[in-house]
Length: 614
Image 1 (cartoon, one colour):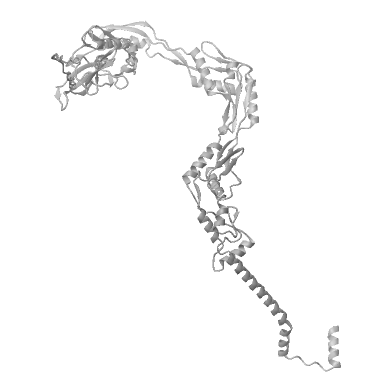
Image 2: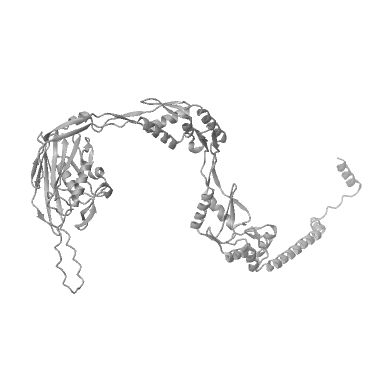
């Protein structure tokens, strides 16, 4: 308001001022401001020009040098030419300068060269020289960037992954350790329990370690690189100490084992060797228990005091003196026999060892001082009732030999070993298992043996195949199940063609199964000229017939023959079992060496001896 009235008063007292011309106002304003602004702009432009000129000068000075702020593996290479850069980097990136790894108190130096890591020093220097020089003004911009910050350049490297993996495995082998739940040990003398503390497990993270090694090789190697590991926590030391205290308390009393025939006592000293810390959850927890091996030994000791073997019925049998020795067609039926029971069979008992160990372990865990010894009844393989069922001579056979030969000693020896063998129903007769290996220590002697190529060679136990053939025929005519037999490769005329069986310990066996409902008693006898096998039992009245076919010539051999066993049962059943055997020719005799010339005429060579046996 004041301003307005004053204005008005001015207008009234004097003539109003003439309005300024528009064009004058425009021209007046620039004249007031243009001078100072133009000077500032010129100053800035000058400064920029000077700066650009300066940068161009500076940039030109880095034409063949590494731009400022450039680092490789922590080494500042700014201003260095190629030779200088290589000199600075060489000791840092040297292949013999190791990287130190650490896991806890364990430190391991790893050589880059051993890990398959190589640096191309020339290419790395060139990469450093090229860094920051992108674009037309790259050098200038690179200088500016280097002056205000830094740029990290990775070295040019190669790595053999196989060697790196092997290095990682080697490090892991040194660092890895299994979790240990600790242990307790009781002294049998003092019954004091000592503790081995638990220990956490650790495992190297192999993929992560490989990555860290690659990075460490490419960077400064004057620092320790932590090994990445996974830790598995073990049971606490407090828990282990608690278990040890429980063990000490348990050893205050002995353990009583209730068993047939009277109780057994496990002394405190024995228990001291038994109690143990048993891990749970892979060692992350634990409990009081027993040591498996100590428990097994204790159970064996207890079982030896309470096991009682079953006793088979003992008996003898006598029957018909009929002789079966035919080589051609032969028919046979069982004959009556008389059985005499000499001692009855008796059941036995045996400790169930696995269950006994479990019961003892449970007693210790529960802090109990009593347990029961589990036993089971074991029946005899041949009971008295079964023995009474042996009332037949079900099979027999006799073969012959010339007296006085070494092989006769072996035949009679093996016959005496087998005599009296009893095969329970369902059991298997194995001649090799029963007689064992034929050795001089057992009384066998050297005699001819059919070797490879149908050559006769001396061998300890030679000749026992004749007993095998005799046994085979006895089982054959008893109608029993023949499981394994092998004919001789060479025919020997003292045996029935196609109805004989050789023997060799460890490779060729004679086996048959007692497929009847009663035991079979094997009786053997021998003289200076023959050996006989008799089988007593009850085969249900099986009648057997051996029907040989005609001998057929074979190429590059001697002959083949098919013999059919016909088994007939009282109910009218019949089974026909043909077996074909092929025999080779004897090996030709080796030529006698030519005699050396002598003044006297050499005597006529003796005729070669005939084969003495198998």
